[in-house]
Amino acid sequence: MDVKRSLVPDIVNLQAFECAARHQNFSRAAEELNLTQSAVSRQIAELEQQTGVQLFERIRRRVILSDAGRRLLSDVRDLLVRSERLMIGAVASGQMKGSLRIATLPTFGAKWLVPRLKSFISQHPDIAITVESRSKPFSFSEDSFDLAIHFGQSAWAGGVTAFLCNETVLPTTSPALAERIACGEIDFLHTAPLLHLTTRPKLWSDWSQCWAQPLENAYAGLRFDQFSMLTAAAISGLGVALLPTYLIEDELQAGVLVPVLDAPMSTENAYYVVRPEEKRTNQIADLFQQWLLSQVSQNQPG
Image (cartoon, rainbow, N blue to C red):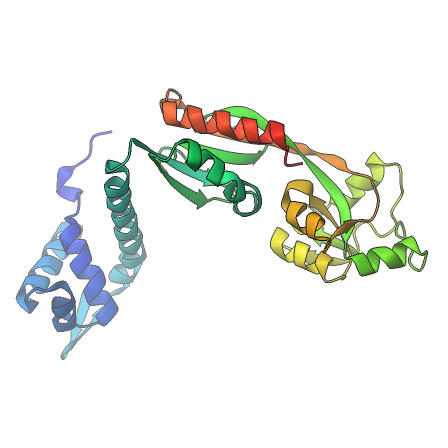
């Protein structure tokens, strides 16, 4: 698709617009940008001419965003932030042998990937690495990642997937609640309080079928939308949670979480490394993928 260059905005004009919108004053925007007020006015006028809409309403000495200006502002701010990140990344990678931009699930990144990343950096200190969190699949054509770590099925539009590892969940809770269950004070299978992740509402039901242990309370109990809160609830003794083993390595080792039963379950989804089709020959991404696989073979996260 051809791009009409007349519609490609001048980044300087966008900066002037964002700054004036933030201050609601052209003079203050000029001071921040180290320009004259007339220069800021001219840049915004050029942007208004280019878009064909009035971006500000002039009221006495103040300028107030018009409806069209408010609709444009959030996209302009996003573009400016992305542009700045692009340049910072270019400067950082320019001093290195290469660069790698990685997308990962937030919890997987924080609990499994980042603690192990020092190993890769020590082997490849001349590679500039950027790690960003993404909770859902995205378009590689819009987000220029070199590699993504995905949980789900082995399908990604515009991406080439490679199996990384399965996920295993384990029923865990605080030592105090586990002791009450072990002593028979609480019947785990029928009366223990269960904790749930809102995005996986059938997990306890699946676990009960896997182990042929009917749970009358499979859907009862507190619900949380983040693994971090679910883990905190289990540590606090609010109930028993089915948690991925990769997520609770440190907590199990520290003893703040303990298994209630030696009854793990592999979930139907798995972790995959995803590469954009147009970057499948990226040698740095190859190195990182091989390193990921080696880490999994040493200590598979779930």
